Image 1: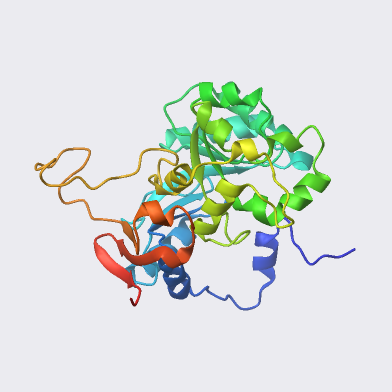
Image 2 (image 1 turned 30 degrees about the vertical axis):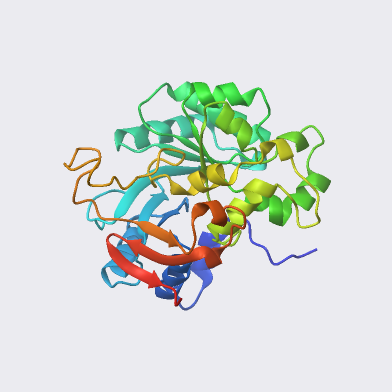
Length: 323
C-alpha cells in the first residue's frame, strides 16, 4: 500500500522539483532560539560546499543565529566556509538491506581522516552497529572523533566495543516517546531490552550526546529531556526504565560542545575564581547562554520549554520572553 513516504529519496525529489523552494531559516532559527538552542548540527549525509555556502549566506544575513556544525559528504571542506560553521564528520549511512561495500567504507574513513574529519555512522539496527564497528576496526585506530548516530539497538556485548574504541553515541530519547509503542510491537524480541539505551552507555564510559533528529521528531530539547527521564511511550508503556537518566544527566546531554557531544559543557567562571584568561577559557570567549525563569532545583521537576526566559548566542541577546 502506498504511504507517501520516500526513503533515501532526497536527491530524487530535489531533481524533480520544478521550482527550488528555499526554507525560511529565519523563522526556523527563531523557533529554535525560543527553545533555548544556541547551536545545531546538520547531520545530512549529502551536504556539500553549495549547502555550506547557502547556510553561510543565511548566517551573514542574520537569518540563522545559531552556531552550526555541518556534517556531509566527501567533498565538504573548510575552504571559504563561514567562520561560524564548523566542518563536521563524514556522514555514512548504513541500511540493513543495502550495506555498502566494506572497501568503500574503509576508503571513506581514511579520506575523512586525511581531511582532519571523523566519521558519523547512521546505525539503527544491531547489524548496522556491528558493521560500523567492523569497518572502523579494518580502517585502524585514529585520533579522529568518530560517533554513532541513533544506536537504536545496543546489545550488551557492544558496550565494551564502543568504549574501547572511544566512540561517542548521539541518540534520540524522544523516539521512545513518539515511536516506542511501534518499537515494542515490531522489534525482534531479542532486541527489545536494548532499545535506545542511555544510562548503560554512560555507566560503560561511553560519551553520550542527546539530539532530536529533527524533522523526524520535534526539535524541542525539553521534550527530549522528559523522554530521557521518563522512558514512557505515547501509549503509557515503559521502555527499559533502567536506562532512564536523571534530569541533570539529561540536561548534560544537550550542553556539550557541538564538536564533542557527551563532553563537558563550557562554563562561566566567576572573575574572583578565574581572573585571568587561559587557553581553555579565553577571557573574550563569546557567551552562549540559555537563562531559565527559575532555579534549576525547581525547573528539574517539570522540564518544558516555557522555562526559557532569555537566550544569548555569541554574546548577543536573541530572545527575551516577556515577564
